[in-house]
Length: 101
Image 1 (cartoon, one colour):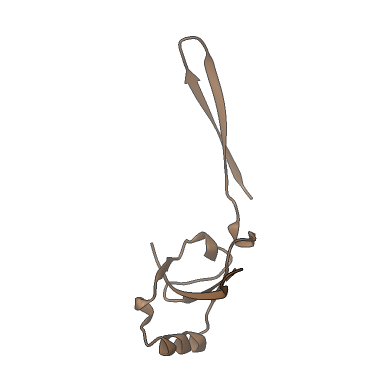
Image 2 (cartoon, rainbow, N blue to C red):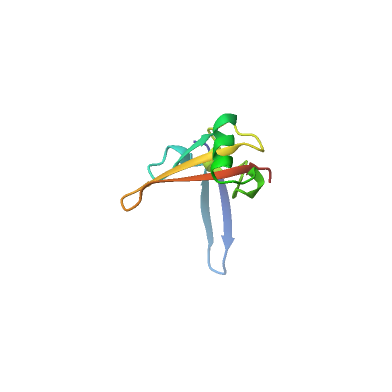
């Protein structure tokens, strides 16, 4: 985890106030509430597209720089499988098509 500190000086009529802010880059891929992201193989991608009778570009998009993808070696055109767990629904699977910014 990296951090960057920045000092801000605020001057008022009576006194100077110094505020130090710190920006932290947080790695969310290991967070307990972050759903599992995985890249589908070409074979699995074709099966999903056939199952839902769709084209990759018709899937919802996910940006290549999305924080959930930072540990994956994704490229534009990949299909991502997102698996979410919940107490009520059990397990839900979503698919996203990777695009550039």
